[in-house]
Amino acid sequence: MNQPQSIVVEFDAADVRRDFPILAQEINGHPLVYLDNAATTQKPEVVIEAIADYYRSDNANVHRGVHTLSDRATQKFEAARESVARFLGVSDSREVLWTRGTTESINLVAYSWARQQLRTGDRILVPWLEHHSDIVPWQLAAQATGAEVVPVPVTDRGEIDLDAFDELLDDRVRLVAVNHVSNALGTINPVEEIARRARAAGALVLVDGAQAVGHFPVNVEALGCDFYTFSGHKLFGPTGIGVLWGRGELLDAMPPFLGGGEMIERVSFAGSTFNALPFKFEAGTPHIAGAIGLAAAIDYLSGVDRAAAAAHEETLLAETIARTADIPGLRRIGAPTRSAGIFSFVMDGCHPSDLGMLLDEQGIAVRTGHHCAQPLMERLAVPGTVRASYSMYNTLEDVEALVAGIRKAHTLFS
Image 1 (cartoon, rainbow, N blue to C red):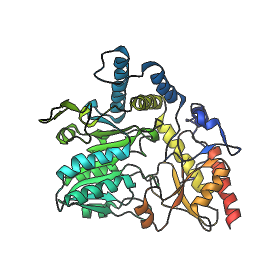
Image 2 (tube, one colour):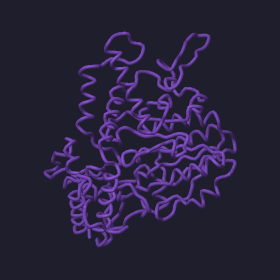
Image 3 (cartoon, rainbow, N blue to C red):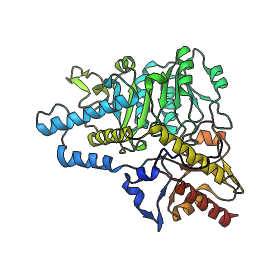
Image 4 (cartoon, rainbow, N blue to C red):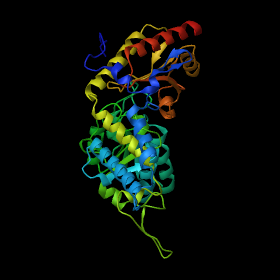
């Protein structure tokens, strides 16, 4: 990657920062440098206000209510579903299901599709890059059905080995589960090509989009996948709300994941029948404020030049790589051709957690450890890394603070 000369002029990160109140504070006597965006993003004021306004003005349970507050809450809640559908390029909002997040979304598919469809000898292909949430649910489904979870090799650069993928892709494969962007390395995977090859072989494709949607636009129809998942809190929205999109014919054929209110059509002790999509998969009172807050985040992003924001993040990553190249003992882990703003590294003589705590003393928030990607850490022969992950509100000053903090750590630990 060529070293850029300056931050992209088309994108004003300093202006964006003013929309995020938490970024104005100090931590341990230093201006906050928030570089833990792969774990969760911060929230703009408009999202905070949308959630507060719901509780101040419209708080009521949705659906079935005949009073005005319930009607207003229902309208906002279902309008949020429509916002998500447009955000993903989906024509039918009934295919958009509310969940608590990416983890629950994947578990829903593992329970309601995989446990019903898989048989002994069937295979699920899962790259070594995956988050635990895209590994363990498939292992549980495989244990219950006699199927097998088969890892797809990853190169030393931290990219899926497509030749090895092709060799594994035979008529035993029923599902390919792959992340759009690696949470540990930032690798942007060629999911459109993976989906094309998988579907040609007769397999379905689930894409974990948790790390993708906050960095660039996503159109699930263009990707050619069958399921797509993401979490609100990585998209500048609230925690506890997520989305599962699935093809309508697949969702229609899948049994409910949870039982209770809203997902029923009729209940009797002689037997129960279930509601239509999307409500069949939304038992109980949903996270109404979360859905409204997520819609506010999507509306906020609609006012952002996302191509310029992505170029800005790429510039920050390139600057970080260039400015740390001469630090003795520092080694970047993974070097993917396409990366979404993640700098994952180790440094000789300094445990990742020690370095993370030293950076925190300087107001710099990073993530340390295996990042819920232990198989990948095993593949790359490291116990864990320090992960600095950028978002559109980060600046060149954040890069400078991070590099200065790493240099200080090198001085202390060398």
